[in-house]
Image: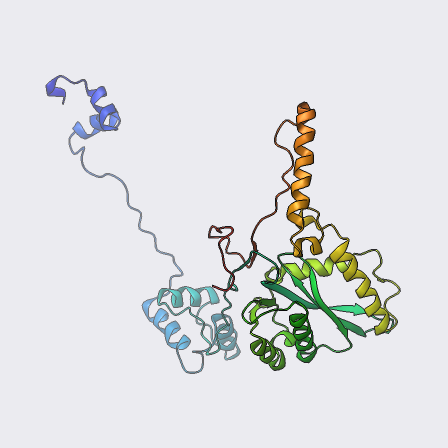
Amino acid sequence: MCSAGIRKNKGCELLGIHLRTVQRWSKPNGLKDKRKDALRFPINKLSLEERNKVLMIANSKLYQNLSPKQIVPLLADKNMYIASESTFHRILGAENQLAHRQSTRPAQHNKPRAYAASSPNQIWSWDITYLPTQVYGKFFYLYMMMDIFSRKIVGWSIHEIENSECAAGLVTQTYLDEKIQPKQIVLHSDNGVPMKGATMLATLEKLGVIPSFSRPSVSDDNPYSEALFRTLKYHPSFPLKTRFETIIRAREWCEQFVGWYNNVHMHSALKYVTPQQRHEGKDVAILKRRDQVYQLAKQKNPSRWSRKTRNWSLANVVMLNPDKKRKITMGVTNPLD
């Protein structure tokens, strides 16, 4: 390029290299790589023989099902030191032998299938909670079932025992009360014994109810029932200190709570309409009137609103176990597809 009349520094800028680099290359032996390659080997590196010994011991019949953390102490009990746990891990990893070394591998639990409810009586969630009695260590068991679309408590019962027969009786009665058809309802719960008992599963199959279960030890797979029980136990009338003296008293209190929750409680997740109003479809007109009130107020005094008025609309679809990695199409998802 210089022979064509281009200045050397401008040519270097064009090529993206420094002028001093070109000057260094122009010197005798300037193209020779003069970097010093320092070859360092750890002084404690295992020899090939020692490395093979580690593999031989780890794969022997005596130790093949044990982890390095188990192998090294056992060798020490025999007055033997071959290598540390980390060295065993490193060598086994290099040989792709760090898979679970025991025949019983941990169970893999996938996220429950996602369902969507676009109207009441499509997805129910249920659970059991303890009600304290005046006898220390004794509890009554509250079985409670709710509709996740409307948040209405559709069924409940209290028993002195916790089993699948009581649960099956509740789901059968609620099924009849709500006039459910086969294959209409998805019933979600956790993995408790009453939920997966033979009687309960047989009842669900007979009724045509589709079961859905949470993953073990994952509390937020059943959030609707957990939130309901929190509201129940934080209600001012809940006898946290005095406790329930009899099961009759517990049933009387729960009946009052269910009436309040369904018909009086203005649910924050429902834009402050009651679950019964949402269940009957009255929420649409109520929220529409509220929006009209706000629009008229803004027309009369627009300076009080710097932005839009309050959003009184509710989502048309309520999700159970939503997949956060995927975009949810609202209003078209059938929970039974």
